[in-house]
Amino acid sequence: MKALTIILLFILSSYLHIFAQSNESAKFNIVFTELMIDPTPFTGLPAYEYIEIYNRSDKPISLLDWEIQIGNNSKTLPDTTILAGEYIIITNQNNYENYLNYGKVIPVKSLAALNNEGQLIKILNEDSVLIDFVSYNTSWYNDKIKVDGGWSLEKIDPNYFCNDLNNWTASINYKGGTPCQINSVNNNINDTQELEVLRLGLDNDSSIIVYFNKFITDKNIINQNNWIINKELNPICCTIDEIHPSIVYLKFDYSFIKNTSYVLEFNGDLNDCYKEGSHSFRESICLPDSIVFNDIIINEILFDCSDDNAEFIELYNNSNKCLDIAQMKLLLFENDNINNAIPISLYSYIFFPDDYVIISKSPKSIFRKYFSANTNKYIQLENIFVLNNEGATIGISVYGFNIIDKVYYSPDMHSPSLTNHKDVSLERINPKENSLNKYNWTSASYTVGYATPAYKNSQYLNHKEENSYIYFDKEYFSPDNNGADDVLTINLNLAKTPVSANIYIYTENGILIKKLINNQIISKIDKIYWDGTNDDSIIMPPTNYILYFEIASIDGSVYKEKKICYLVKK
Image (cartoon, rainbow, N blue to C red; front, side, top):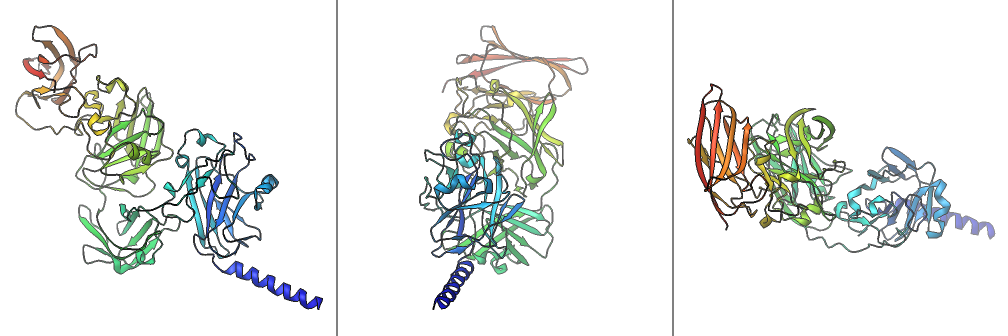
């Protein structure tokens, strides 16, 4: 009888083990829910790293022969069963005993350390099928104090896996984390956002990359008949990126042609990771052309911002060509030498003519702060350099270090009517003018909230062509930083090549108030801007002002002219 009981128990144990091992190990049934990445300084928990996982299914799951991958380091998990609704933490074997009082712990010998700046972590089942992944970075803390250590990152809703960016934040538990417990930030995410295409890229001249705003698990997305180019051409292959399931690759038996626009469409039933629905997408795509000087320019800079905001650099496609940002680097100069060079995008990003994109460490902070008509026009760059509040020279290059634009910015370029520059961007006035012309930059208008991320600048001026030798866009201006006529624009259309110029500004009584240009070299066709200030940077009162021009040409002749402008108060 005793032997029979032992045999029955063995069979039952084996059955339960097989049952636990073989069922419910589908994608996202085991999910990462908490990461203690930087446990120091000590807040209340043991000062050791841990990774928490959670069984969101309704059955036990065996982790026998499962793997956890941290970066390029892979470790096999010991034989452990995680019950339905149970939290377990994974930690280095050397730290195992420090967390036994908190719940079930899986010790792993020589488990790799977590990178404080960001890393990809994956968990795979016994068949090497990816079950869950997380690719974290420091912006997820949403807290400039907690990011320095002692606090874990917690998942907000373990049953939501459409977009990790908005589903993680710093723990609010006084100990700094909640190992083996329901998270302190636990909450249901009510996803009302529709599935949409963020942008398109190209892998090569016959493969399109589609970037969505959410993860997609529905296999209809890889149904070739649901995709079509120009109403006639279906892809021969469709795949979802395993690590980033918001990315879809389409391979065509056709080579796209430069300077030709194509329309990509999707029509069909499609479930995103959260809800069902019928979807249709229609996006333009083109094969990118080569990038030359001034094709893409730096168009707006926010360098002095508050804690709930983020610095950004805006790029503008100043050409009539489709271009690929993936070929570019963001540059920081020191003493006219490149001090730092960062690839802007690791993935193809097709940049259309007259389009905008912002580069920032935390784009979502920017779009919370400012209105934008294009909240999908961003590149999150975790390792972007800090912009010096006192000024710096930045640039962009292509194909290595072929510099295509370069800008010097400083707080002195802000409108003199502003007493506080924090959270106010510098905007380029005319995208066709020299980037290093400090008079071609000014503060964003207060009417737009002091910044225009990813859309047309509030201070943008579209200069007209005219045959006059010297003329103003408008003879009047009002330097009140409201976004309308804030500067006087002086257009020079010179018949002879100039070697030096003076532009002096006088009151009606003949009193010199400003040496706008003093014995400086200007271009034959040039634009100069007056912001309404005198030589002491004080805004002048509303009245008429006389501009005196004295321009020496290469042949020794000197051209002189006087013009009147009107500074008005609106």
